[in-house]
Image (cartoon, rainbow, N blue to C red; front, side, top):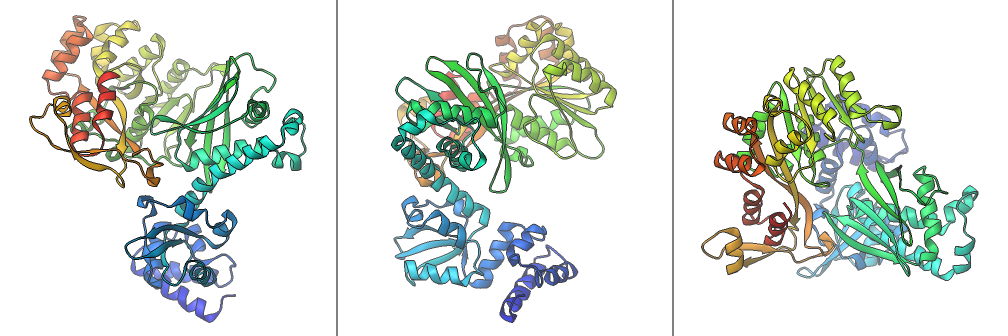
Length: 565
């Protein structure tokens, strides 16, 4: 049971929450009754019951206790200061020292539980009475803790390996009992690597064996960065561990294999797609990281310019036809497709997807996983879908003539179809379909629009630096005089890369009567592209140029678009 002081505090905070109109007074009274008999902390109980979200609650608590609320995502965190406390201490007391405020000569200390007065007193004892307590959501605090300490754990594990070379020769993951398995250096290394990659926001992990070293690299915002390296003597145990948890054949090292790992990290479920490839010095392993929680992207976050959004609106309102997304692997085509599906999904339409694999789960959408071993291919799934009375169909990828033909027939028989195709630009999608064996008249009847997409890195808002453009940059941007631009610098918030996240740049081709005539006459990609530009289509260069001039990315990122179209 809570004492009277605690009860009064909780009641006062609850009244503040009611005043925010996030719940009724009756709902709050019910919660208060349960809190009086529950052992779980009050703030955790409110989140669990979905009365209020973490960010809202943190703001309420900050206001009640007279602390500031901090969005710690935008703060340059001093990692050495964080490491002045142990991982166990931070986990127990839910506090993290963020940085030292040079201007006001005080430490900024984040807490997710200002109810814990004992923890607050410890903070003042450690950092002095001029320490400034700020409140932040617990999930963000945990993310910072994991990001900073995960790599440290990896390096400690590698150091342990180096001191125990005899163990390396004898370590056999297969057949270990559970207690030994948990304490195995290989298990610790793999687990900390997965945790670290999630914490830093990596999309892929590359584990690459060479003659004298094995290196681990992360892909962050589309670029590969070396994280750490270790002795090749460690690698057999590490690769075996990865194969075991991804359900691959541990005895097979001659052919590529594909598997999957599911892992819970900080209360959220992640999928890891594992691919092995035999190389000269062992199997290279690439692990793709997929966050399986509900997909939360919307079109406003994808980088479409206002004039492009108008065309996309028009395309998505079509009652039938096919819309194609094109671009190289890893350019965000699936993300854009999911965003469109989420936008169009409502109770009045039947939405079915065919994917390989299903990367994100969308509530209310019927998602089909391709299974080639069971002969459930894109083509066979599409044939079955026709008997399911769909309104909107998403096809993960058009790979062959059969899939293309079925998708096109669906598009001209009253269904709106969305799919992806591997081409360099929007105009190239037309000639690619014809190359697959489709007749031009078939393409013109079905195709309503094509969106070509690339991803460019977004400048870190915390450290980007303003400067005036050079003469060469003026030529690239096609401007007459020097203009204010921004360049990448690097800080702890962006892991010293100068960039944080990525943004899409697009060209949106809308099918017109003039374009249909060109396609019927088997015009070249160049001719189709030229006509689309005359009709007002913005190409990738133009959209990326706008992003540069808006201060969101650099000229260097624009050049990657120009030379890698």
